[in-house]
Image (cartoon, rainbow, N blue to C red; front, side):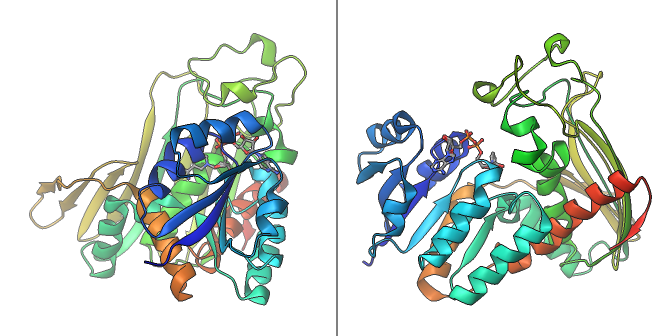
Length: 353
Ligand SMILES: NC(=O)c1ccc[n+]([C@@H]2O[C@H](COP(=O)([O-])OP(=O)(O)OC[C@H]3O[C@@H](n4cnc5c(N)ncnc54)[C@H](O)[C@@H]3O)[C@@H](O)[C@H]2O)c1
């Protein structure tokens, strides 16, 4: 069996928790390099997964290796653009984590480069491989909702700003806060379920309220705590967002909070149609309610590992040249949406998209 040789660039949380466990189960993949600026992180992966062939700190070594066909860019957002562009120019196919990069203009440049180099560039919008999302997309396509007129989503958590003061809360490095970090998943899956809805106009407000004084902010949970820098760092990103979007299909309203003074974590998307409605409990099951029978369905199935399916499908694209659902050209509308929401918040008014 042909094995596709790959390099993993960035061996942090998403690499450790999702992509290494997935990729090491694929028989048609050979992990030639694990790369991280911090050598201990890549070495820890090699120790855990002995099939990894080499550990490096400079990704250019992998790009210079003609055996390597594809790379996984699993670095923080600020490095997505440079590492992806270098990789494409070196003739490699790329699977880059979400968000594409810190803004829409650079996202477009990445898409253009992939086209120019005739290479696959996929984005890690993993929810498109979640069984519930796939089922809802099919239900929308086959008319189960009737006229799906509105979608409401809420992704709100109690005092859980990640890595306060570090890359997550420094706009120049992350591109933004809860909108780009969590919103990217919610808005992407909504646009996907709506069959690639096109944006018309929108309005958004963003707030940076909860940790204006980083030293006095008390947190309930802080993921990415290893990246925090409360003493000398920066927090200039949104911890709460709200807004309204008009598309050529359903309208969308939303609230998102990395942190709020309410101990009520909510992560759901409601789809409202004249024949049926559904609540997607994010990352989990969904309920469908038919307007005619007023029955609630709670489908049961094994939730597959969406990262495994995402990675498998990327390797399939590398081998066949076929563009799949996570190809950058199918994800650009979500990047445009995030950018436009930030622009509306800056202008403090509704904008046409
Ligand atoms: N799809 C998802 O569900 C999901 C979940 C979490 C994170 N992410 C995304 O994954 C990316 C990484 O997030 P994370 O939480 O794993 O971050 P992290 O900080 O834990 O890991 C990133 C790693 O990249 C390394 N790195 C940075 N620049 C590098 C370079 N030039 N060469 C080699 N290594 C480099 C860092 O040293 C670090 O170990 C982010 O873009 C994030 O948005 C996606």
